[in-house]
Length: 429
Image (cartoon, rainbow, N blue to C red; front, side):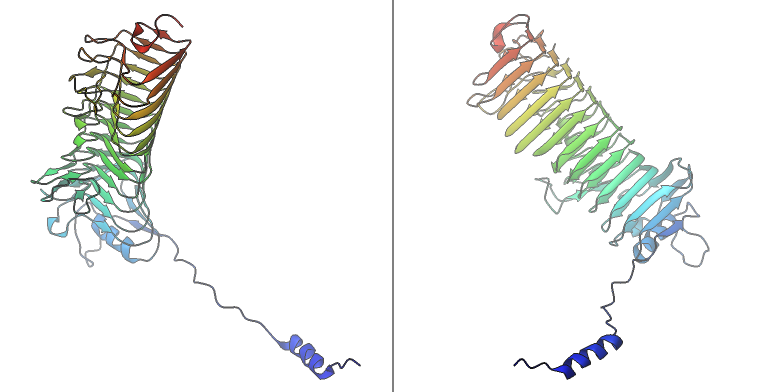
């Protein structure tokens, strides 16, 4: 016979009618975002003066435990004069935004002989409607490699958090003071950056990134980089993470390797952009240098024109996968015949490693290199580099060399015009 414990069942029934189950309390809600209005353009720190300076606003935003928006007067200039305090620095984990109250640009200008304009070492950063200028930075440490932690970075802005810039002008930021080396004339974005509708001009670095040195994904839209200068990556140096660049102008950037851009591995997308009149001085890549590693290159609806350097408007080392579509590469000049087992020299495309290059509906024409190599295309020996051309043109080599010097490379052509036999085929496609 089955025994039923009726008293236990009654106890459970009674308990169910009176028992209230209370769960563990959840975390408190985050503090509400704060708004901080800057009311003076002077660089003061005085809790009793009844005004709020930019420096005080940055300090408050770092201490309030909340996401903060700092608002400046549009068209005003905020001059940093407290050289003893260094750059205004936001170090909290919460996000911070600096913008203007009416959408016009306010200026933040550093006046110290050594001093960054702004630093961010905490949460995400958003800056909009600003001019950032006058940063000055030098180093006693020789930055022999981009990832050297002792290197100083970012005369204009240094950030270890992801940063978004919208409608920003960065100019006259110089990271080239002192006997060592400094990276990122305007911006050092050590967690990547998104940049829209902005301009970078007349910034300098004596190492990497005349305008920007970036580690992490870099996105650039509707912007321009003009007359910046560096040892490598005269406008942009991407140390890792690659770059996605759309509707952007790179013009008259000068210095060393990578007349406009240097990429160390990762993916480069250039779409609807113009790279014109850049000069790589004593190094490869009159427009872009892919400096080792694995590079994935996508060039679409882009003009690469009138760039000058020792070897190649587009120069790669390591392993590269190119896709060039609806683009023009013309009028570029290679000035030195640095052709050996490691280097290639061509006005347009110089392959210094192994590559697969696909060219569709594009023109590679009227580029120049010294006699002995290919004026439009040159490849190092002992590689399995391949070119595949469709609906394109390779023509009018200048400087004494033929269209192509493929050496160990090979090329196929479909519906493509080639003006001489150096690429393996000649005539109208």
